[in-house]
Length: 209
Image (tube, rainbow, N blue to C red; front, side, top):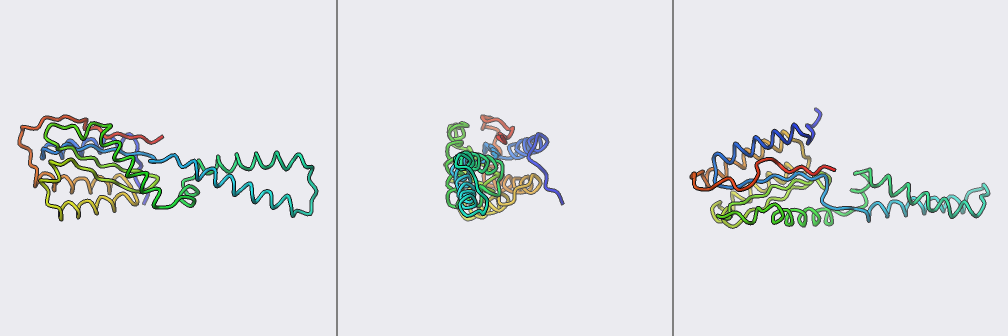
């Protein structure tokens, strides 16, 4: 079965899901979906260098004769071609980066977004960020102190694990279903009182370019 894509329709679906959840809880939920959390130019340059090295080996040991000027030209061309193809290939970038570095990029991106989007500045410390990074296939969940105080640690950790699992092979349907379960947890321990204004946008923030 083809996985649902994160497009405008998905944005609308997730926005509706956030509205449903916030009708039942005082928590302020923000969803951010990013294409990637790091630049990964190091992987592109590494692939370019590897392709260049293989090209040099071919030139050195080939039975064919090449003019010296072609060596310099080929080195530059192979590096540029390799770097370009890597920048367009998630497979190559994953192959040439460690899971540790990818996870670190996601954590850094999520932490920065928590403050950039104003989630850390809600009046009653009720902000919650669900940050999904598609290239890294990783999800980060960050909540302000008011939420963490209200939700028991065990239930929070179990829900966090489910959300992380939904982020490992992200598709819209699974992601939305898991968010609804998360909404039930929030409404159980932080039910809507009518005293907490809607301080943050409900529409998800999609950064897919």
